[in-house]
Amino acid sequence: MNKMSAFQIITLAVFAAFAVASVLIFAFVLSSSGDNSAGPVTIWGPFDESVMGEAIQQYAEKDANFEQVTYVRKDEDTYMQEIIGALAKGTGPDLFLLRQDHAYAAASIIQPEPYESLARTKFEGAFIDGARPFLGASGVLGIPFMADPLVLYWNRDLLAAAGSARPPVFWDELYDLAREMTERTETGTITRSAIAFGEYGNIAHAKMILGMLIMQAGGAITAYDRDGRLMVALSPASGESRQAASSALRFYTEFADPSKDWYTWNRSMPASRDAFAAGDVGLYFGLASEEALIRQMNPNLNFSATSTPQVRNMNALGAGYVYALAVPRTSANPAGARQIAFLLGGREAADLFAPLLRLVSARRDALAELGGENELVKRQAILMRSWVDPDPVATEVIFRDMIQNTTSGATLLSDAIQRAEQQLQSLLNTNI
Image (cartoon, rainbow, N blue to C red; front, top):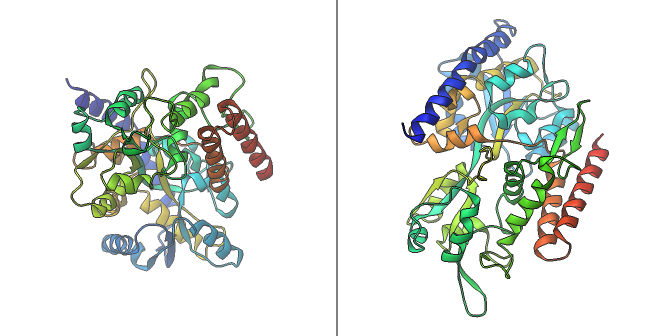
């Protein structure tokens, strides 16, 4: 039996156990909504308006509840601030797409689904592990909808020229690949890079990548204590995970260190995705949803996508974004919004919306059916893990400083982590 078929059998066996529970969840919650139609429901989110509009129209042909559903696209970088501003004025949407890293910070503006109607265990059985940040203090903050996992894009031609028939499966394989593929002038200027890695400003998803490395090494960024309070877990005083953050940060930043044989990137280079699309870098970490954009940027680029590398002898895990449907406290139609959220979180909607959005469902039963063009993305979604981010804008700055202070030599690596830990603690103290 090959590895792929073994994975499929194990995955199907595990997820089949959750299928009945998932059906019961949605049957119970929707039945509690009564026989009335959802009525007018406006949804805000970052997804393409024409695609979402088409999907909603198609779904409305099957379910009359969607006949009065309207979707409005907002800029992903600013729409959370726009939602908060609208809610302060008593306006805004009835539903909005909430990314898992915004869930903790947005809890105060959301009407949670009580655990009495959707228990934690049933939620965890129905949705992927990457959706756990939606488990709030008093209920579920959002019904998971779609997942956009991180993948490794690789340039087939550049890897072949370096004598490599495949992209790295384990992180330690990057050392030899960086030596073979990276090209530098006599003065040390990099003209071809093995991987966009090691810096912050010109590396897309740098915070996500470093966070994934920390978790793959057995560590955590935040965690809940026994009393249910969010605490900093970046550098615990004891335990096997004590060195996870330092080993992850050291590994990540070494590829931006000119003194290393595997030096392959620096902060003067172009944006990582642009460099990959131009054919100047062999490996690029990007979201699964970026594939179409990369092909549009360079239709002649000979590239493919694969799983993110793993740490040897450690549990496999990945990263990415999970989008859920949340009901704001100022919703003009909270009952209808709740009904639409559960319908969109159901299996039938997942099968319709996922291919149109070029994403995958956050439902376990939908991901259990491996095969086809989306098999890689489904596998990566299954492996996704998320940490509870107290404030994604503030932690972006904390991770930036931790990386840049290390690569610039402004602080020792251990001091950079200690400072990041102090900043995270100050952030949590502020949010209490």
